[in-house]
Length: 344
Ligand code: NAD
Image 1 (tube, rainbow, N blue to C red):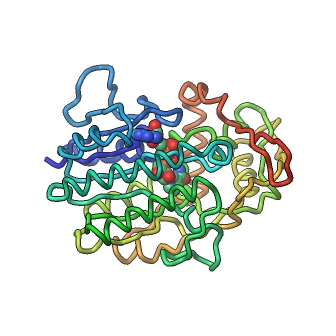
Image 2 (image 1 turned 120 degrees about the horizontal axis):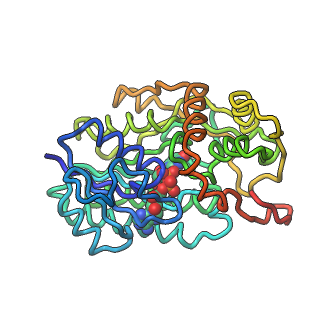
């Protein structure tokens, strides 16, 4: 029986991955470590923690910065997938302390525990982000694209990414650095753009678009991301350990197209597009070069943006009781580059 530690497993991508593993590998034992910040929700997990113990999924309520706790859990694990982070770019503009504490120092704690138990830990999958690259300087961004993070979130994640790389170089811990592009799908917090647009339509509110709406990202359905992580967990170690791997579709979509596609799928009466100031530190475009993921893992995304968006719209329509409590966190006050205070 394999034991997999998943940090941040009660968040958006983490919980989708926990559900994926829980369904696909009945023989695995999963340990979820999560501090249940505003972004984590115990109800995202595939089992009801309140109804007693489940041998296959053990939940630890705790902070990745607690070295003793992380050591205890690491000593029982065979592989680690480290998602735990503060993850929202706009929130990092408003208050970034926690981003550096969790994303950088939390990763240091996890990496130290991997080092301590390296005889047992077979692989350490660190979830970085495409945000480390800054805006695209080439048509597609490969893993060799310069690292030019443009927001406090991106710089904290970049610090964590390079920290893990340095532990690989120095101590040869079995690290794999994954750089996913923008994810969307079920269980994503309302602060993120796709759920924000969908719920704006459901609520009959305008869809607020940053700048002129041409900022574009490579949108990846979370299910495709989970499949890539599954392949990374199960590829031969020689193939993947020490690698940096982009996970994205290779196509980008701009904000105005997303807003209009959501409006077309939902046919709202009272939800026009409304432009607001650009986000400071806005990345203009991200487009993934996924050649390495394809060559190393044989991975390719399967879900088109239109289909993924349609599935996501349906999920938010059907799960209002899940997203209602997050309403007060949909917008964040920030001061724009022009010195104007706006809700983003
Ligand atoms: P999320 O904000 O939905 O979830 C983060 C989870 O981490 C939450 O459950 C939260 O409670 C937990 N957490 C936060 N601080 C913690 C701490 N100190 N100790 C333990 N747990 C803590 O984030 P997400 O969107 O699921 O992203 C997961 C990972 O993927 C992050 O590392 C993020 O940087 C990365 N990523 C996300 C995207 C995306 O589009 N969402 C894209 C690329 C990379």
